[in-house]
Length: 248
Length: 321
Ligand SMILES: Cc1cc2nc3c(=O)[nH]c(=O)nc-3n(C[C@H](O)[C@H](O)[C@H](O)COP(=O)(O)OP(=O)(O)OC[C@H]3O[C@@H](n4cnc5c(N)ncnc54)[C@H](O)[C@@H]3O)c2cc1C
Ligand SMILES: Cc1cc2nc3c(=O)[nH]c(=O)nc-3n(C[C@H](O)[C@H](O)[C@H](O)COP(=O)(O)OP(=O)(O)OC[C@H]3O[C@@H](n4cnc5c(N)ncnc54)[C@H](O)[C@@H]3O)c2cc1C
Image 1 (cartoon, rainbow over the protein chains, first blue to last red):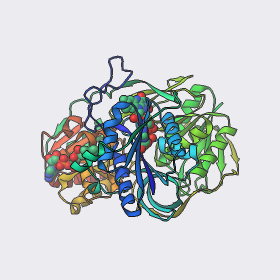
Image 2: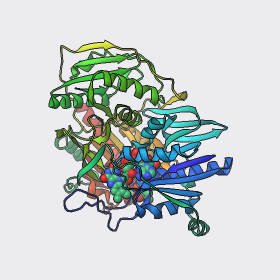
Image 3: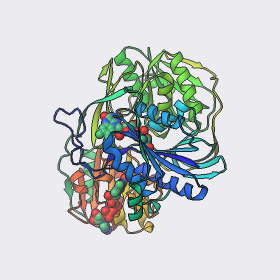
Image 4: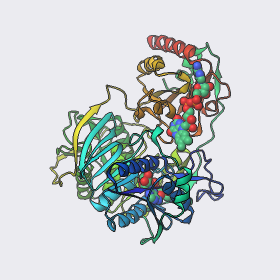
């Protein structure tokens, strides 16, 4: 099986989000970047599928050279090779177009993405790739098994779960459940050593403009101090929620 | 020109979110001085006339039945009608379905896709609209560079309003759609629970509850308030609660009117997914718990004493109101 895992390079979940003084861009100074958490589930799943079915796991990121440590980490976790599309990923459509190009130039049986990138939260790239390449697409995928050229999946829907099947090649937007949190692979010493010599190809970005851009940013208004209610005075809380907050 | 809105339904009934995006679409259409066209897909047991009460100028019903997973069919049906209605804006709810078909509709229509929006566009050409970003840690003004834009509105971001329209047109159109490439085997419905995305009140609990057997009081409180139930990430990781209840930066992002957090410390990743809630209440034994810095109301105390008393007070409140 030839599997592609698309990896978004995102700020660590503990990062304080700050913007430049003119509010036009995200300040990356001092921010630690990580593999997008949804993509971590996809990467571990891909490695497990390779163990079962043989084949190769490739990881790809569209980003600048600053995202290479994140790709190296994916190699250390167990991917076989990495591709970086060199450019500034400023919008979902641009990312989808560039990733689609890499996909159409290779023969992948399975293309795994995350349900959402935790930075700009577009939630758009997986579906756009499916549309651009006319491939079957399963979003919010929480379980996947492969038998021959057929995939069986579980996906989350509002109000329940749906069990679906599709032929390969296939695009999925994955999340927790593909593998459990406790099964997530982390790099070991040997992985880190071998990652240095695994191939990381840099390819040029072919298009330059997306269909949208982030013009300015602001932080949510600061919260007012928390109003404390004594334990035992739950009646007061109910009154506050009814009369003051008007939420019950 | 027109604003087209996807009036999503589930088992034949319109979702609450549908009335929210319809109100939003009506306001966008008014601002753009154009008409608002609602599209329904599949068999609808509700009366579609209700859509006119929320401001639709025209309702197009597509009777074709699609499985939930058939994002190819759904998006092609939607894009066809949007094109034939001359849509320059298409609006969906930023739910699983919205995010699965919205981007496909955008690619088909050569439109941009902007999700997680929280307001009507502040400018129309080029379109500029406010959206949530960085998992609720920031807002962003996003600009569209295309002539058409597909917008996915963040659930619970817009107030539902009635805008009665007595002269609404109704049409039914059969769509020619290609065969799906994903087949549904079966659907397992969560038992009568309130969907987290749409819940107006959410009762959530964390590791402070000590074990899965202690959730009875959380469910009782939720039932009393017609609320949804949620949990912190470790609680779903250890299997005390289903993954579908995990909220936060790496779980569901929610924005209810009221979020009650019981025995949850208030880690930054947890808050990221819930801090768009209008009002937050924290119940925690530790007065230094970070949740109290984010909450509007707090009680320092043992959940096993506070929650049962709160349940009694809510019962009293309900019987006298
Ligand atoms: C310093 C910096 C600045 C950025 N500035 C912006 C900005 O201003 N506006 C903006 O929209 N984006 C920006 N990005 C890009 C951002 O990280 C995402 O790549 C982009 O937002 C993707 O669109 P999305 O949010 O719709 O992704 P989603 O659709 O939410 O992502 C879903 C999945 O798609 C895949 N994916 C997403 N992005 C990539 C990628 N770049 N490479 C490989 N796979 C990917 C992953 O599998 C991910 O889980 C920036 C990135 C960096 C590092
Ligand atoms: C990459 C990454 C992503 C993450 N994403 C998420 C996410 O999406 N969502 C999420 O929730 N977390 C997430 N986390 C985890 C997060 O950092 C915290 O570890 C987690 O939120 C803590 O859960 P908790 O509050 O239930 O447990 P704890 O931190 O253990 O807190 C338990 C709280 O209960 C209180 N308590 C104890 N006994 C009682 C009692 N009897 N009555 C009342 N209160 C009591 C304690 O004082 C404490 O504050 C993520 C972490 C990482 C590294």
